[in-house]
Image (cartoon, helix red, strand yellow):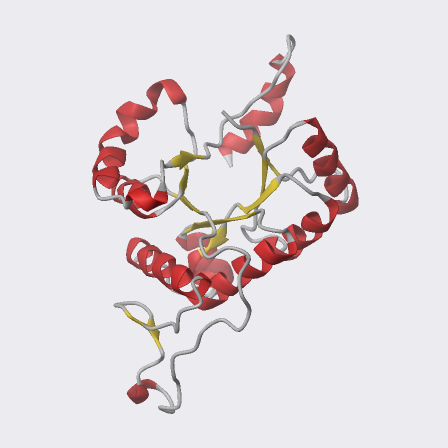
Length: 245
């Protein structure tokens, strides 16, 4: 078992970064930087990369509809570069309230888009000329939809890694099945270890049956409230509002 945490904004960002650095020294394995409809996660992860040396830095999460697939891949490669190979790409669909209410883009086909985005990202990191003619993304753009001048391109820089770990935040049966098939990791919410198999066991099994062995075992990055000590009852007052949100 590894220990992770979401970024804590209890103070200013300088104080938060110092806390992450201290927790890294204490043994923290991974920190997740959220985005939602707050400040972007990318700038903060870049700052944390300069203030830490060992802890993994994950987006928790970058939302599918807010960036093109290739920009998502470029961003991940850039963060992996400035962190010396410590970045983990957490992606997810978010929800229609945020996508349509804040970003003004339609919330449609999250599963299909996720699968295509993962495929495109891995092409970029392998420095292949990116070619993808899917249902939701067409790269290069077909000539009849633009100027006709687009041609397949590959990333200029050599990425630190050609396989940056991808974590998908998913809850629904089909989404969890797809996650178990194509992602290095799964980030479930409301995860209760003793009950998880009864809720998601079938979906995980179906996904793993189609999983490429090269991906390794599916890693679970569960959001589970954790407090260590003899007197933790007071922590409930902190957990309840987060669960309600």
